[in-house]
Image 1 (cartoon, rainbow, N blue to C red):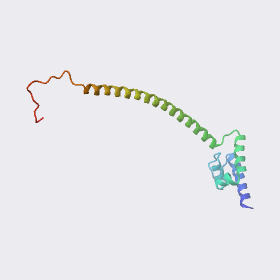
Image 2: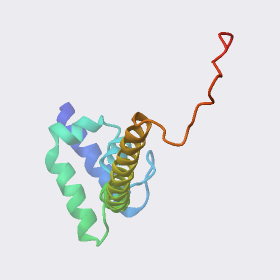
Image 3: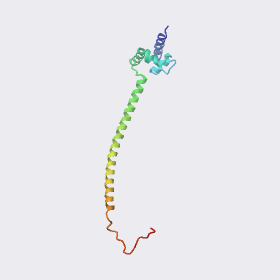
Image 4: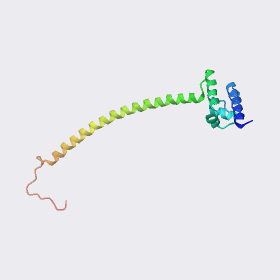
Length: 139
């Protein structure tokens, strides 16, 4: 028997065992990885050489009203990613509002600073020097 025919036979037998709930070598998950382990073939045998058997396996799983484990994981991941995206959108909206508030505060402070500098540049009208006093050279 050729290696390809032997692989196909082992894959079909493994498919039957997994679908019957009687795995011998794998955990019985409805995945190509489990099917490859159960059939004792490399995973790429199903993803490259025997695509028809891989598709047949998934068709049989769906025909039983079940969802393949990899699809279940992907759906859960999609839900999680949507939650993360919603949280990121909320945070981004808040950060944009914060930036606007900070820009307004910075503008106000810059204007106040400019006014204070202008006041410092003017001579002080309320300081009157005492006549006859000279500043000490030690100071």
